[in-house]
Length: 236
Image 1 (cartoon, rainbow, N blue to C red):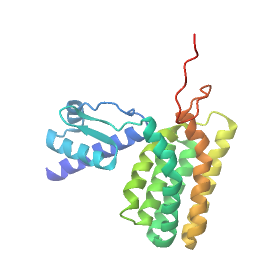
Image 2 (cartoon, one colour; image 1 turned 90 degrees about the horizontal axis):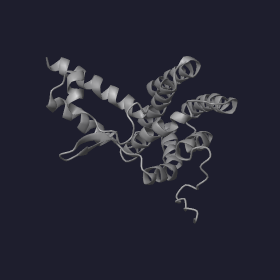
Image 3 (cartoon, rainbow, N blue to C red; image 1 turned 60 degrees about the horizontal axis):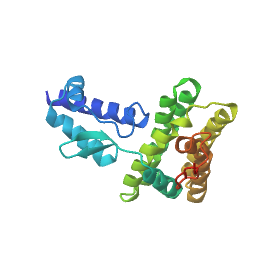
Image 4 (cartoon, rainbow, N blue to C red; image 1 turned 120 degrees about the vertical axis):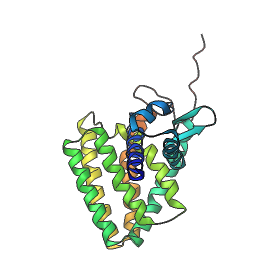
């Protein structure tokens, strides 16, 4: 009985995590705990344990007397994301090159094969989650108790706002996906060689490749307002 409950908790955790990262559950959406309890076969106590775990990792917010909701993506959140992402990615990749084990490198190579398969035949959600798993492994390789929580929180929003990157709308965006895959291969080679400097630079290059597409989430085409400013109304 205990094992069955544990399995149901793990399944719900995985389902909610994927739904949040692929925008099936939108930022700020309320979570219907009664419905989740019925669908997952979990009573209130184990359900709340799952929600607390997700809250601790940044996927949901728990509000007193108001229930749980998907973590917001405010203007300030996006500003902080763009400021922190290149620094955190670079630090993680450098540490990964220094600390990666052979088993972790094998896992990273397997994740890259899954990513390539998702690029060929998967949906945008499949691509986003395969890419996320690739980067999760580099975080595990870095093995830094201070850096990892920040990196994991970054990956949540990278997956959410990066969904535009995995829905290529023209040939250029499709080419960028191919280049992203090639950069993954180069990252693996740098980590396997223990070349921290090369891995750090590749992290920056990888970030710069996706940045323009990620900005489409923040600044839709036709809306010409610099990030961090408020559009002024034209005087009547």
